[in-house]
Image (cartoon, rainbow, N blue to C red; front, side):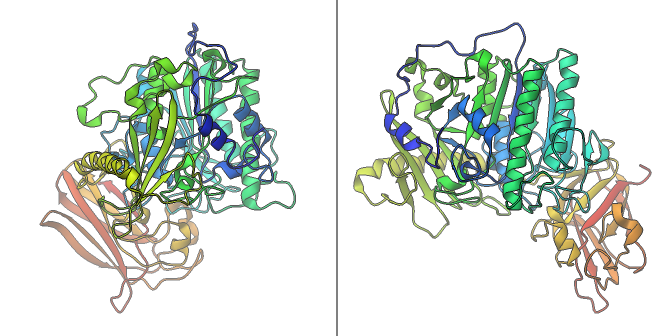
Length: 612
């Protein structure tokens, strides 16, 4: 077993032989009469040091360790430095910034509505599709998972338990979640793990989905992006004594992975199931940087693939694949490996930008394409209102000499006014030796900068677009506009609501039909309206709200800018706005106190077409 964070990568990198000595040539992806199922598991905010496979004195994760030992391991696999961008890139096979996602809040976490997802592709090919737990790419129509190709959806809103769009009061121990549009309260189920916990709940729903499709003899794609171990951490009921809540959460994830592996064995589908396990961003450890970082510690994560019927892993068949791979590569790889056809009439502007790494999954270097070897991957996580050139970037590229990797370059720029940095991660895994000023590498630097310029052109083509929540559609009769999605201010958690954080920002919307629209501006969500009022502090700080304002406009045309006096004992302030036209608009709301100053925020705005 590999015992520390470098997990013999340096040894693997120095070997950098694609031909694995001691193995006979194997044919990967042998076909069976039954199409394989696909399960993609992706826990949140953890990386190598969370697993005892890589860190002997870390959390105890024997099930994940065993899976790693039986898998093809992508040792230089990269994702984005934070949540939503990784999800957007993974699901589309396209860079996250190109599909409209370069933040985790402020409406910049919503993947553009015209993008085609991995679920769309699997569904086109006759697969059942299901999502379980964390979506984080938009909570309203047309951005919800059920709008993006997923047929079975069990999820929380926002980016984690306790975030502002989540059902009020949710924690990983006590929660109500949406399962196919039905609100379901989490309970202690007979699942072999003590107590109720979100990871248990969503894994149970995933297994129900699998059961249903096994009975139908229908292949399935189960996307399981766990919301754990994202903060805030609470102790799982099954945690062993003396560990932190985060360690307990990681070990609970491992128990659920053990349940999943056992389930696949019991259902006799383990050999013909493609099981992928990875994480959504780096988390530091021995590598430089962590979540949000441009260095390897921010983006390089474990990635395991097991599919015995396809000659990928299985008992005694674990091995490392060392070429550069990334989240954008999974969709084209699945299409290549499983012979999936694309959706019809994909527009050129939605072209898949990742590359299939299928040729690197066998041990034959003669079929490894030069185009893949020579490609570079730009990863960026700007956290801005609009994309900004030269704002937080890294460019990764392998330099090959025949069938050997000679260098693993990483070019970095941390901000507009910082200096460029260059590292050869092959020999400098922790990125301590910046070699940008060595004239021997001038051509390398120029090439990587050119790759970035090409990437930027793709981003810039649609950089001025807003992703717009559609109001008034039969697909979502009542739309809740959340402060989480304000452009221009940061209010992202239920803690902000409780303490009455002040702020206002606009939300980009589109009215589905012309007509009269009703708006109910609230401080608290409807699910607790029986114990709160507009101004009460039963769940937190009391606010002195005396009036509310709503403004709706598009370009230079203002449709309404109205202020109403608030009844402090009411749940909200209601507006009925007539003659709103079909099409794009912006909505902004405010609460004011008696002196006319801004008081808290309109954290929840319930909106609908009159008569819905």
